Image: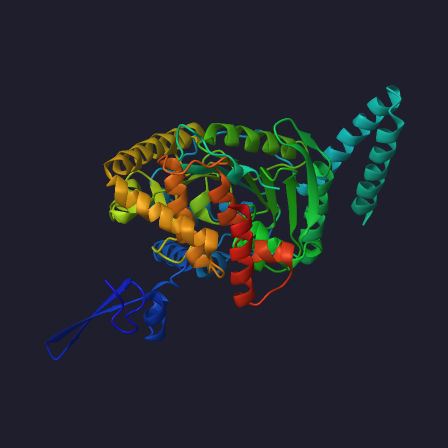
Length: 164
Length: 336
């Protein structure tokens, strides 16, 4: 079916209007639909939809004033944007998020691959430094001086950042 | 340069490529939308330190790039080659990209999530792609701790990616199913089993070159293995339908359509991107159904990718749309 307006492109939007009992049907291509103001269907973004889902669950739970310690988001921020602030938000606002996550996924239990370690970013830098120093030692011991020099520079750079 | 579109699988020629994407975030660091400039730069240098120059068996040496150092034309050409997402290019602020030499592995840093690992291979090769993505993930895990929750799995900015953070997809060439108006019905039925179909190019339901992307939607409550197996099984079913439809086509009408498309591509002086895609799709169908015998069966797909606007301009410089159509026609004439 071609567009009723331009007749050039295939019609993808079908508009039915009822005025005083008279039904009128129009078929439009995406371009003409946008021109006529029907394009906003496409702008219904995922974030908007999620926002309304999160928003729903606030009706049942007393909205917490608490803010996430890591990214400073409040639950209201998340409910408004439909976007979670950081990984810690999932813990902080678990009670508030769970009803929507249940509706979104149906089955809320991860069954895939997992990890066991958990370190903060600072600890991660420390961890990385430790690893690099071990590598440096091995490199020196096995007389790989070029590699050792590279590792030494990387360690220096990381230590400088840590001091800041 | 990319190699995914330069291979054609003889068993399942309708499957153009397989892609695995893993969404990962670093624990206790705000998601990109809420990160400060300094946090972004720190994260980029942390990841750069781990991955730049590192080697993975399957893909070779990795290289880190700052997005600001890559010319815009090249970024859009990368989008055309499916190495990075259009959203990643449009974003502002510091971003990084790690790619292997053959572009099989690409890691977007500070897209929607901190880390997006992508592996793209020609033909149906989801398991292999997942293996490579996993190896890249393990390499990263040596230096960063991923945000993870026993119940919710890998934590992502968008709650729809929670769980495995895995998006597996295949790019399918379905000219026969498309012409018999079966794709819409297909989209409807795969959605019932947690998969989704969308047009590869073009907006909304409209597809160009009869290329469709089939991917998993569910990430929570399903293992990586199960998601990939599902997708594999449905892909095989769809390609079988395409194949049997192909065999039922009126041979002489098909030959006529294929040769007309080839004729236009060989002799036209101006070809728009839209026209190119439609003609190439028919030529590709001609190669698959044994009507055309091409020395390089991957040539149609190669031309389809490499004569898109940004890819053309990358080699021939900036042009007006008209000049681009002339340049595209001449590149195609030369290669055919």
